[in-house]
Length: 323
Image 1: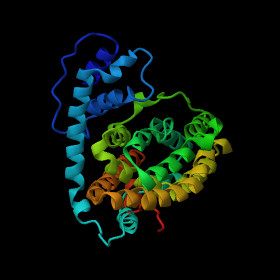
Image 2: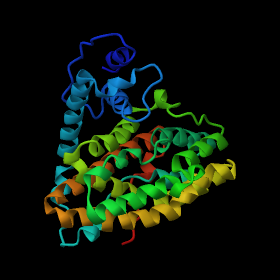
Image 3: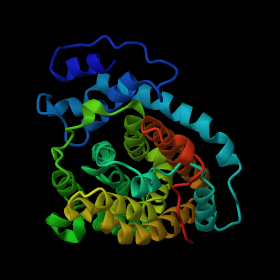
Image 4: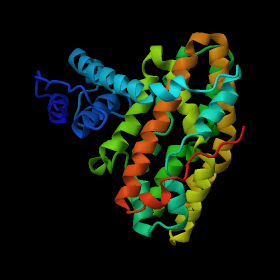
């Protein structure tokens, strides 16, 4: 699948797509193909015609892959979504929902136990997202209105450096990579990413680029923000513990404060505001939150197992939220 997409992007003419399997979440080939198709709407590729962004055949293939991924995620999260609290206060329900997650904590391991090479591996893994941080959610701005739109714009303004190019969070992360002795080039480490990392990163555009899923996209964003502040403090401490330069921790120190604010805005003003204006979106907001937690948990278990750390950290939640 990914080879066929690559050939099409390089101008090889019509492609006969392989059959899309029923299960794509743990299919590295399908997740890589989907990442490539989404990337056409972001930075693109040096050797691909920019007009391929709207090629009907590529759009159709992307739609098939998206539909399978969404169906798998809905099946995997149906139980927790159906069992979510419903007090009438969506923000408080989301805080409780996120806080109940029992995923293992990669941040805790990085804080106290990771080697310098494991920290660098984590930084490479995170680069797939952080070098285009929050870009997917900007697709949702035109699909919102009123208070929810203003609140999302506030979050995005912070993510984009509050008008200062040198403070773009993607720029700060590039500086983190460089300080850690890693390649800060956009997409430099894509070739070594496991399927779990590709799936985590594909979730963002999967939800954000369809107006039908705007509620799910905001639920995913809010969950991402609500599970970031305290873990970033631990990751920064871990970076400093293994002796990497202080500059390598600046990005994470920035997110300790920024995401503590963003979680409140995202849950209370964006998600709750969105559902107040359109109550039919409540279930989708919960689905987005659940999908985020599910894929993050799968990723965390994979990387901790690789490091031989899963048994000790299996019961330590990475979710630290305060309402």
